[in-house]
Image (cartoon, rainbow, N blue to C red):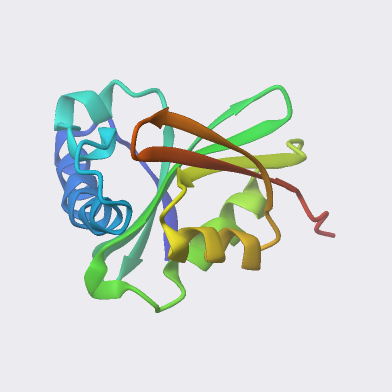
Length: 154
């Protein structure tokens, strides 16, 4: 079940961190860079981030999360994470499809990931995203950006 979650609730922010930290540790290992911002988050920084969060619950347990900001026809995906215990179960795909359906009036989705995060890059390309650029953040760290025009649902 996917539902909107209230990130300002400290208990829910803690739950999100319990998914975010292990998930982003996997990304940090993949890109060989361990100072990525999601690993520095706290309950307080999540509560103040200004993103809208949706959680995927399996048997009452938060197993995946997506967060977005919406502005001027764009859905900017800030976080898409699945707890490593739930990898390869279709949770990320379900969360992405959910955002595409509920983001009425917003025609374009954008997202970025570490350029060396091959599983994420494959995932976004497989789900219709087109690479729009690569930005060197610092030596050894680049971010790849993607865009997808939304499919219209009837």
